[in-house]
Length: 251
Image 1 (cartoon, rainbow, N blue to C red):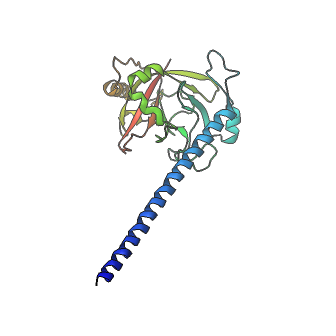
Image 2 (image 1 turned 180 degrees about the horizontal axis):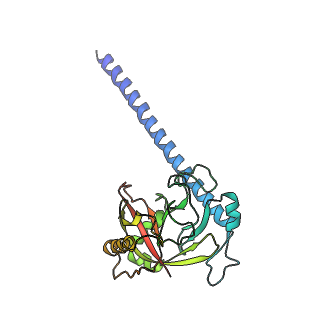
Image 3 (image 1 turned 60 degrees about the horizontal axis):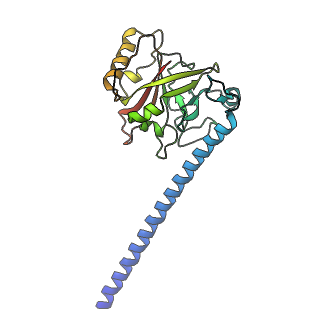
C-alpha cells in the first residue's frame, strides 16, 4: 500500500516538474523573443539615422541634415522628420491612408511591432494645420515615443524644451513644448482636422482643454494664430480611452 502511494507521489512530482520546466522554457522563449524584437527595432532606427542623417552639413537653424529625398525614394509616405535634442526621438515621420497603416509597419513597409512615427491621416502633410497630431508607440524599452512619459516631470521639459520638425518642403520648424497631460481620445485634442478652414470655436475648445488639463505650472499662452503639434502615445496601463500627449507651439 505504501509503495502504491509512493509511486503515485513520484508520478505527480514528475508531472509537476515537467509542467514547471515547460512554463520556464516557454517564459524564457518569450523573453528572448521580446529581447530580439527590441534589438531589431533599435537596429533599424539606428541604421536609419546613420544612413539618412548627418551633423556635417547642419546650419545654425538646421539641427541635423536629413536626406529626405532618399527616404522618400524608399517610401513616398515619408513626409518629414522629427528630432528632439538630448532624447532618442529622431525618426522619419509618415502619413498613411488611415491611422492603422503604420501602427505595426516600418517605413520600409515591413511588419514591425514598434511601427512608425506618423501623423493623423486627417492632418495636412506639411504640418500647416492648427493642430497636427503625431502618433508613436509607448515601447517598454523607451524607444519610439516611450520617453514621452518623462515629460510628466516639469524639470525634464525645462532641459528638453524644443521639438524640431522637418517638413515635406525640406524646411525645419522649431516648436516649444507648452503642455503635457492625459487626453481623452474623444476630446478636443483629437477632433480633427483643425486647419485654417475650421471654426474658431473648434480651436478655442482645444486651447481651453490644454489650459485646463496641463500639468505644468504657469499660464499657457496660445492665440488663434498659433500652430501646434501634439505628440501622442499610449499610457503605461494601456488604457483605451486616454493617451499621454505632449503639445508644442511653433515659434
